Image (cartoon, rainbow, N blue to C red):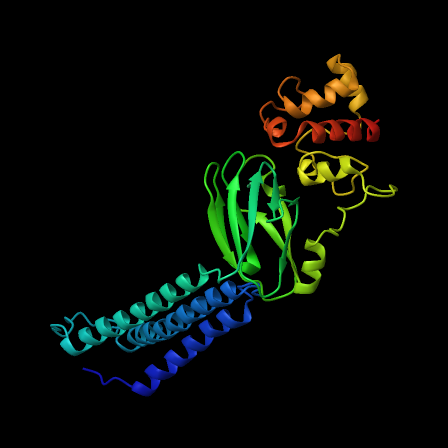
Length: 339
Ligand code: CUA
């Protein structure tokens, strides 16, 4: 039998390990963590990755070395040596992986338990998902289309859905939670980095799924308190408009712009539903007065379907989720801002 050259074996292992480590380090696999939970989760990721890199280097070294060194010579038809196992090696390759896998599970269990602990005085925010928008309700009862969070304070999100199953995800917070109708699911976040982070729906929920986005804004505690005490910034202003339009606020908060285009609201560029810029002509086609047509289209969207569009796409829950005053305000806002 040929003697093993341990120098070559180790050299191959170092090269394979270096290549795999470069792939792990120089490709930006993870977003910048923006919460303590994300920091811990990314630690688990790197902990498991370092162990995997070590295992990979050992396996790649032995395999490559064996392929080259113990390859049969051309014409060699003789049998290989009769090997009957090696108790020492078998114990090593059982015990070491067992220790490593146990270490990963212990670290994971600790992180999982830490990450579900919101601390003594968490800010509780209710998260409502619906086709195709997010809304966030604070302890004072106010509802906003954007999630504002104070830096370094535990936040407990109570997540539910008004219609189908959605999923709440902010990449930099590193956690996902399903929004299920009739059920409250929790997610604990302790933001530790200022900034704007995209809130994304990660459960296919209908035609507007890819547009079901919002923002999580992490603010300095003082700025958050000022905002929370009652000077909330108005939503994006309708172009050319002065002052806050209640109708525009309702429009934005209910996520109408994800599916409909309306020129008076710059963020309303959706194309899943019909454009709202020509409602007078649509009402004439439907044979209804403008105000009646708009109201019916909101509370009973399947009563009349604009030619070229599908029934059952627009949620029929707005008649229940909005108050009569809100619907009235929205109807008049739309009537005043369409052609
Ligand atoms: Cu909501 Cu996808």
